[in-house]
Amino acid sequence: MDTIAAISTPIGQGGLGIIRITGPKAFSVIPRIFLSKKHGKRFSAKKQLSHSIHFGFLIRNNKKIDEVLMSIFKAPNTFTGEDTLEFSCHGGTLVLENALSTILENDFIRLAEQGEFSKKAFLNGRIDLIQAEAVADIIDARNTLALDAAVNQLDGSLSKTINKHKDRLISLLSLCEANIEFPEDDMEDNTKKSCYKNITKNISSILKDLNDLLSTFNRGSLLKQGINVVIIGAPNTGKSTLLNSILGFERAIVTSVAGTTRDFLKESLIIEGAVVNFIDTAGIRQAKDKIEKKGISKTLQAIEKATIVLHIIDGSRGILKNDHMVTGMLSSVKHKFLVVNKLDLGFKNNIKKGILGYKRFISISAKDGKGMNSIMSELKKIIKKQNTLYLSGKAMITSIRHKNCIERCCKELEEIITDIRKNSSEEIISHRIKSSLNYLDELSGATTPDDVLNAVFSKFCIGK
Ligand SMILES: Nc1nc2c(ncn2[C@@H]2O[C@H](COP(=O)(O)OP(=O)(O)OP(=O)(O)O)[C@@H](O)[C@H]2O)c(=O)[nH]1
Ligand SMILES: [Mg+2]
Image (cartoon, rainbow, N blue to C red; front, side, top):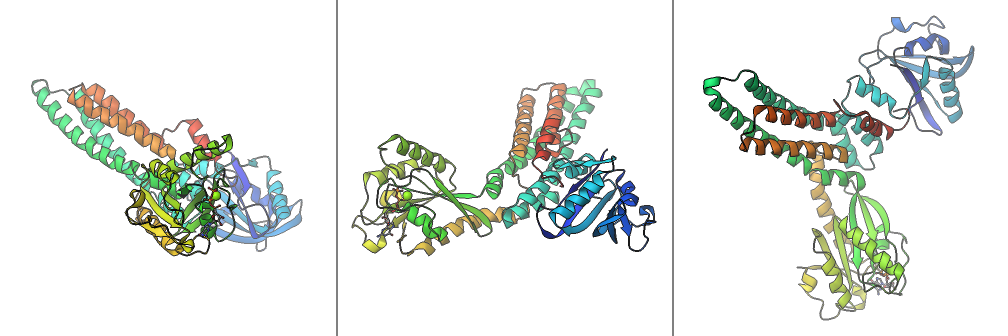
């Protein structure tokens, strides 16, 4: 294991900047670079307690380069599992660079790679891969809910669930293997039957739990990417005006020309602790030119990724062919609202309950902000519902890697049930249980291929 060092705080000026060194030779650098206020150069790490802090200077060739606090963390109770030093320096770019280069002048220490501190923690068994990913998610979190979910994951909510299922599969495996090794000739059929009955019952229950876990993925990924609220409607109905009104500033161009918005626009707000992406789209009609056609096809893509759609029509104009066209595009959207705009101009007679197949509608005037509260309170209701899961502290999956591993495990488990129905041999069943276990091991990092590990840790910043 190498000894590595890096600046762990962001580049730029700040009150403090932290340099971290970890590895078997971390403490060897102390006499070369640290001058203790209390012990001078005779400071000895050996004589100090773990998790202790020491006041002194960082020195380079006997020249003081900063006044620092040095924390000593002794293996194995450290983040990486190895001896670790942390220098709290002053948070200036130059002073930190000086300090780091002083440390790296010692050839037994090298600069850490991206995510290498977390990778060491993982390789030394301090955390599993799921928890290492949670560390990255905590750093990346853009809203409090995503942060809560990541902290839960670091605390082991998902790891515990996966380990519970691994243990269950291991006992089923030993049951099956015992049957292979000690077949009781005369009672063979009966033993096999009861063994298979037991396996089927347990696998079905594991499958149910894993499928429940899979169903958290959509919500889990919404936490990271945000909930998409797509504003859609015929041209000139006031979509861009509505976006601007929601945001509180002029983000989108508004004109009386139909077909003003050609591309889609996205802006995010934090609502009820969640990231909500508002997306303004090109008006839907029979496209007149190539650019408009492209814009409309982008609108269709936005609908596919929508959690909530605000279907807006111009109430002063009544319902037109294009409005029906929009309705036709929204059949698969779960949460959609009809918003009837331009209340200030008065609505046509045909604007009433049940129009375009909606049970009710929200009347607004996007131009003067009337009715905006009703839109926001409808949005909040849905967002709150999505949030209940995050706040429950239950295990959930937020990454496509987790989803893939669990899906492949479930497929294998389903095969086991099919094989048992066909009365296949115990060898086949045992082989399948082993491969289902492999997928869970890959998930927690016990047997994850190197390229997957590298991909996970390369997403980290240097110094983490
Ligand atoms: N009177 C009135 N006019 C509005 C209202 N909302 C929007 N308008 C006007 O309607 C016209 C079209 O508004 P936009 O917001 O550009 O409409 P859009 O749906 O984004 O249009 P496209 O991008 O062309 O599809 C502009 O002249 C707006 O000023 C409203 O509540 N009342
Ligand atoms: Mg527009």
